[in-house]
Every structure is written in C-alpha cells, then in structure tokens.
Length: 478
Image 1 (tube, helix red, strand yellow):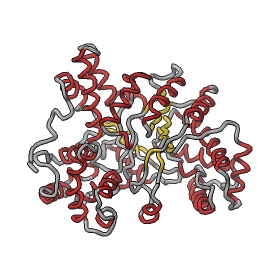
Image 2 (cartoon, rainbow, N blue to C red; image 1 turned 45 degrees about the horizontal axis):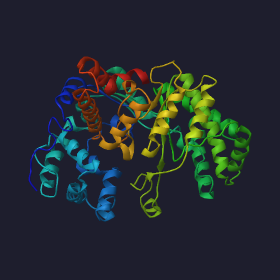
Image 3 (cartoon, rainbow, N blue to C red; image 1 turned 90 degrees about the vertical axis):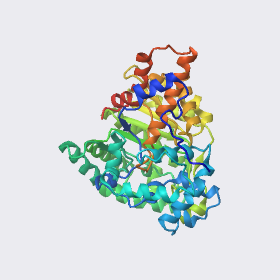
Image 4 (cartoon, helix red, strand yellow; image 1 turned 120 degrees about the horizontal axis):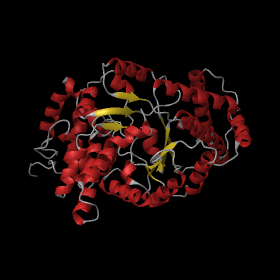
C-alpha cells in the first residue's frame, strides 16, 4: 500500500465556494461541545495519556465493533493484551474500514492534533505512528487540557448522574473563574437512572433500590414515596444549576409518556419500595411524572432539554455479561414514538412550561417525522427554540450528517441550527466538528455554484459561522 497524503486542506470540499466558506467562515470558529461523555476528572487532573491505545482505543466502541467484525479476538480489543498489541491489531484493521466513517475519523484524528498526514495508517506504518504520537503525548501540549486548547475548544458539557457530587466540576469552575484554565467545563443533568425502566424484573428492582440509596444521600432526602423522590429529583436539579449546568439529557429506546399518571405512579412506586417488580405500564407511569417535572424545572431555570431517541442497547448478552454496557453492542430500534412525544410537548406547552429542546433521532426512517413534529411547538419566545439535533451515533457520518441537514432544511430553519457535538469519550474526537463543518460548507458551496443559493459569501458565510458557533453560544446561554 502506497504512502501519501490523504487528508489535504481541501478534504471534502469539492468546489471553490465550499473552500471559501470553510476557510473564511467555518474553520477557525471556537468549539462549543455541548454534549459529550468526557471525564471531568481527567480534565480536572489534566490527564497525561501514556500511549495511543489509552487515548484512542480505550472506550471507543466504534473501533471495537469494527475489530470484532474483522475477526479480532476480544483479547486484543477489551481483553488483557498489551497496549501495543491492541494498537497493532487496530492498525491491521483500519484499512478494512474504507467507506466506514472510522476510515475518515482515523485519518482526521492523526492529522489533528498529531500532524500525521504523510502516510496511511496500517500495519506497516503502525510502529512509526505509535512512536511519533506517544512522544507527543508525553508533552504538556498533548495532555487532556493541552489537546482541548489545540482544538480551540471554548465550552464542554459532560454527562452526569443526578447523584454525582460534581466535585471535579467545582474544581474546574474555580480554575475557570481564576483564569487558570480558560475552557468552561459544565455538567449536564442526565437522570436516566432515576427512571425505573428495569423494574419489570426482580434484579432490576434490587439495582434501582440501591441507586435510590445513593440519590437519597446526595439530596439529603429520605425517599419513602413518590413525593419524596420528586423532591430529591428537584433538589439535585437545583444543585446542578448552582454548579453551572444549563442542560439536561435523557436517553430512550422509544420515547413513552402518558398524561395524568400521578395516582398510578404513586402506587407503582410503593410496590418498588416494597421490593416488588412492576409492569411496563407502571414504569411508564412513574417516568412520565418525572419527565414532566424535568420539563417544568428546565423551563423555570432557562435550561435546554436534550432527548436522545432510538438506541436499542446491549443486544449481546454474551458481551454484556463479560464487558458490561457501552461495549459496542447497541443498534437502532424501530417503532413508533411520535404521538407520545407530541403529547409530552403539548402538555408542557399549553401551560407555558415547554423548555428549549434539542431532539436527536437514531433511526433515519423517522427523520421527517421528528423534524416536522418538533416544529409544531415553536412559540415565538426564542429563535429556533425546538431543535432537530445533529446526526447522532450511527448517523454522525457523512451521509447521516447530510441527511440531517437536508431534513432540517426542508422541515425547519437550517440557519438557526445549533450545530455539531462530539457525543464522545475521547479527547481526540474534536475533529468531528471539523468533519461537520467541511460537510456543511460543501453542501452550501455546491448549491451556491449551481445557482440554488445566492452567490453572496457575506450572507451565506455568516450563516455558516453561526451554525458552527454563534447559534449554540446564544441558544444555551452558558
């Protein structure tokens, strides 16, 4: 296999107009990564990664999936193989990912921040890449914070459980205020564990009760009934607000919500506290009450809600039992959720308590359903209040991003879009913002040259700049 530069400065930019939009309006905008799964502790401690496997392969379930598909034994993926052996196996598999987004992401992440763009990544170049990258990782410029600075990151929002102490966020907030660390790192309220989704089994009830003990201690509330659970929920929301949170986030397989369920929810929650499993309908009753509370709390405090819909998780019980969740065995789910989501929005909207909301869809068959649905609930209170979120997970690749942009353009206002995020656990994933920006500029640049959009760079370029940065800054009000 020949070695030559693949990631050129015009990567993904197919016209002169696309190039001008990217270089003059998109490339240098700061990054607001308003949804990710980075560890606040690693940022607070400014982790210095020992080698490329630790920063590049650890926790990356995209790469794990590809390696399994290529016949790599789990020993070299999440097992006890050495870091070099895992890296070496990934180098052997990377060329097989051609036309998978991993092929582009791998090359982009080596190009920035490591500056490696003069060779393909494969088994023949693995050692040179390993040595060069590891040498840089040992320097201050390539610590967790160093990489964030290199990538021009301005704000990061992590994903945090309501029972979390947020101790690392407090430390980071102090350093931001004092000027020690100039990047704002904020928590996001992620209450998935508060919803009793798995209490349809005895094992699920046991695990849920253990979680309630943690939540009770964190909130200093004795959770003895549904009312006290709601009080603890609201108290932790207030605590997150004090520490700087301005977003919540909830993940769903299929969104489910029912109105007027408080009596049924109280009875169902009492059963859980007694150690009894409950029905699927009863889990929906409890979750519906909490989701309504969350919407009202977000509205009162000026937060934005995020709803991630469509992930069917932990499909392989074999892998789940051996490795646990987030191991690369999730997929899209099919099924209807439009009516439930519409009822939820309407219930909050009719009493003036629908917050700014970003909804992400994982199954592209529901793109137009979702984008058309959320537009019903814009109320004139804020530009782009109801956001059709960026391509997520299996859809944050070129085709998925283009489809999201097309759907949003047809069903809503692309010019008010709050843009891209990483949704990642890796400090090297900021190149996904650049990937998105190039795709956006290429889409608009081609239409400028074909006559579908005006050949007005000040106008179209201004829209690009806002999508890449300005809209998110104004929308989330950090």
